[in-house]
Every structure is written in structure tokens, then in C-alpha cells.
Image (cartoon, rainbow, N blue to C red):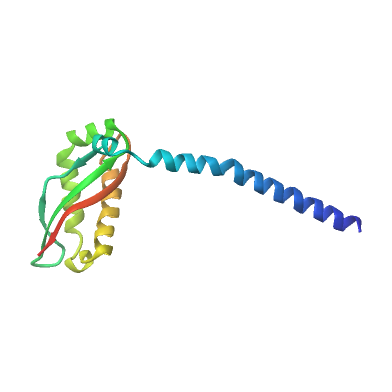
Length: 141
């Protein structure tokens, strides 16, 4: 009977520690989510728009016309991005050119190119991070 009581006490202690840890970390996650939602003014202050870019695609005889909005982590990163427009443009062109027309058709294609650009642009900037990339102009031929 003594072993059963020890097992029950150990289970209750582990459950209490788990519940405490859950309650301890839960408010931080909610605060982090609230912090992530930015106002329209903050988004405008920390984002850049690329020029409209026309580039060939990986599939022969096809080209794409694209434009992106890039949200950066802070104003310093935006300033860096404005100074590195040639590198940003080159990253966009090489990323778009690596896809075929068939890969880019539909919502999944747009999502795929946005995700790939986040990764590619992260290599360009020394300060801050790329929070998200949105396709604002998209035509395939």
C-alpha cells in the first residue's frame, strides 16, 4: 500500500509542475501575439515595395511580371534594404527565375515564392530580419 501512495504523490507532483509551467508560459505567448500585430502606420514604416520586375522563368518561353511588399523587423533594416536595392532586386529575380510556370500557378505557387523569398532575403540583410513577403503584382506568360 505504501508504494501506491508514493506513486500517487509523485503523479500529483508531476501534474502540478506541468500545470504550473503551462500557466507560467501561457501569458508570455499571448503578449508575444499582441506585440506582433502592428498598426498600418508601423507596417508602412517598416516595409518596402520592390519595383515591378519582369524576368524569365525556368520553363522555356515563359516569363513573370512580379512586385513584392517586404515587411522588415525594424526601421534600421528598412534603411539597409533601401541601400541594398540592387541586391534585393537580384534576389527577387533569381528566386522567380528558378521556378517554372506550372510551379507558380495558383495559391500554392504564390505561397511558395513568398516563403522562398523570405529565406533568400534573410541572406541579404546584416541587420534585422524579413518578417514576411507579400506578392502585390503577379502575372505569368
